[in-house]
Length: 281
Image 1 (tube, rainbow, N blue to C red):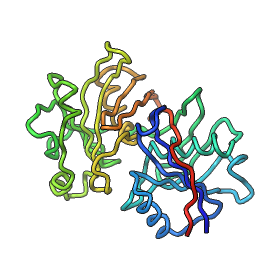
Image 2 (tube, rainbow, N blue to C red):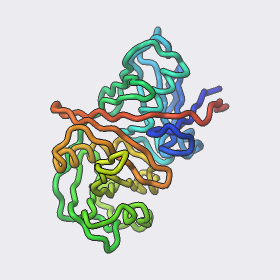
Image 3 (cartoon, rainbow, N blue to C red):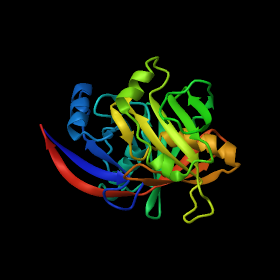
């Protein structure tokens, strides 16, 4: 069996930046066991599998597809960068002729449209609620807020505004210690965020990093799903609907956000292809 595979760096227009995802467009469903083994072999934060819903469709004419995401250790409910990369593969390499693609996923229908050089994703918004407890991930640095999105099991920790951006970028997080500090199952990922510098070009409204050792990802380079939580939080704090975000992992990536009044969020970004190949089984 031969399976086409593409590796794209999402939320960037430069190779080796952003977040890499492996994308496999499949003519037929495979077993969950095989999906997981392929994802472990690719060993990226996510490997996505696109399958047809209507057997008479193909990747050029179809507008609705099934999409599943696997980390090296497990399937996840929502992944932004691999959704962006999946749409890019269909639009760019399968010459999909539709203005909008809809993916049926564990998080419902997710629509993606092309806009210029990039793609706009229509995602659910996941508003977090204030939390007293927090996972010890930031050392002795002062903290302004702790919020939890129970829906996504993502804990948001906001550093105090007195912290410089270098505090966030240089923060060393021990993934083993982080995972062992939270075993209740309430938290599966930690977002560390801080207010941006909107007056300095290019004008980021906020910065963040994301750690998910519970899902086999010590640090995720650029995380679309985390911005369904961050977008809600910062929109309220800043009084803004449209925001520009930067995730300052070592690879780094940029996301444009627009919080809507209907409980959804537009997340936009670019993607660049770094590999095309075939998995032979």
